[in-house]
Length: 257
Image (tube, rainbow, N blue to C red):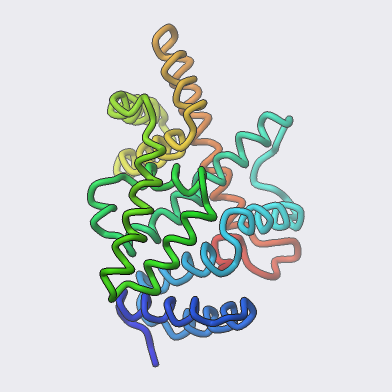
């Protein structure tokens, strides 16, 4: 049966998660994605497969490293261990934001009151517990007495990661927009979206946010440079994900479910 709607995609994911063997889950997830006729539910199912079936953040990190080793020419250069740490932190933040989109589809009421970066913080802080609650909710989505406790668990995980700097979130978001606006490389129509991505990537890390805030008070130009560096890392992660492996065979990470 073809899958055309979000509800049908949720039903398919629930059936997959009920299978006892991981190998069967992987096979059925691949089959169901092929049967998905619309882009939005297909993307949702791909993300569910990556998060709930294939191993989540750790599996994506492993694929990323394997892909990096397979590239004939990397679209960027990692100069030292600190650059490598920041690159991986950026990639992991983008992965967590991607998985936050899954939670938003399962819990639209939470998504309406919490931003994706807040959900991503909860995923990074306790991925196993988050996945367990999300799995329970998907399986019990039609049974309020089982769904609601799972929803409340996820909401509590998100709220537990509320940062102490949240009252300055608007200031940081504006700083990201201003820094990118001063960059001539970004088309005007994409500025707000790209600035929002930079803010969200920074916001999952208290360390990086506090660095921006501390530097900005004394040296706004240096803060701009840190924000532009963060954007450069995002571009590098995207470029690597889209790059074909050596010999032009296979698929980039963006296409690997």
